[in-house]
Image (cartoon, rainbow, N blue to C red; front, side):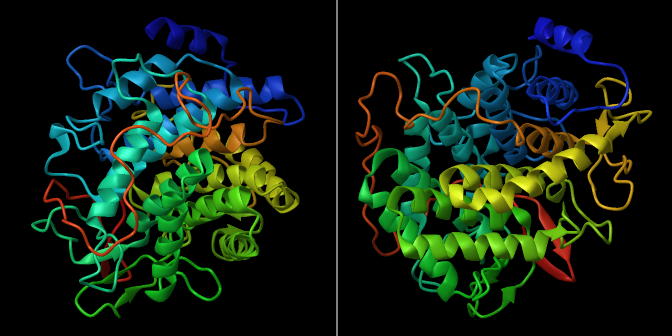
Length: 442
């Protein structure tokens, strides 16, 4: 891994990231430079460190997001420099039950955290990412195991359904049902259906989406709101984040692709319009809840990458949306690359002059002084989103030793039902206060 990083460093051009977006080779070179700067934040592969963990101030969920970004990077560029590291980290964090509930997160994990790791696993399955050895859990199986956990935690005793933010009742936020947790459940179910054609997954995806609408968390204009308190199920936090919107857009596009139904097309169209209304300003992505007032937390600074990947996948899964989505992705890729021009005195160990900022808006869209894992991930996903096609074509998500179209192995998927047992296992994620309202984000 160190050799790969050294080669990446030597091969990168000096100074700010400059990309000719008419050239795939130039896009890949720029992405390589950004990826190198990103991976300088990760130390899980070093002696004495824990694979799959980022150092403070990053919460555990963000490493799962990091691996998703790296899988996407590999799929679009063919650069496998970080594949071994990604596999090592994902497999180290699966836990004793192969469901991303590891002992080292026993007091710090929520449903949305667990789901973020499951989305990394399903991305690996979809893209044909190299499979683990046969004595280890396979990517799709890991996703299925998390899906089954979510089914058991579906709670109809409060608010007629939905996943709570936290897994364990003793953690702050257990009385809050958020769109991020239900969004990862929805996206996971939708993509498992696309891979397997097992109707259990589409049934659950439909159930989750309907609950979000009935709870008032997906509005008539397809804005996705933050969540609802379980005390009376009417106190809705109306904050919008690009993460939650991206999860429901991606899942809806997967279901449209699998079914070509008018209902899912309507939802794709509505959510895409909602994203444009809420998160696109003068063509540039803006984290509407915090960016303009400069109050985004470390978590929030990583959400644009989810939105970018969701839009890119939507353009593939629902090709008619490409005419709308591709120009937006290109505009933001150019702005993101331009913002990868920082050279902070500390906190960034990538190539000098290539640190990526958070905000891409404004007349100049130059480096804004904010650096970190989220900023690098966002920019990496933005730049590679413009590649003409994936270097590695998507598969049906099955492991090489499984026939196409079969149901996944692992615990049997459960049909929708009432509230199951809520597993008292782990969970406090970051708390963010916006507008005086306490709410959870991964």
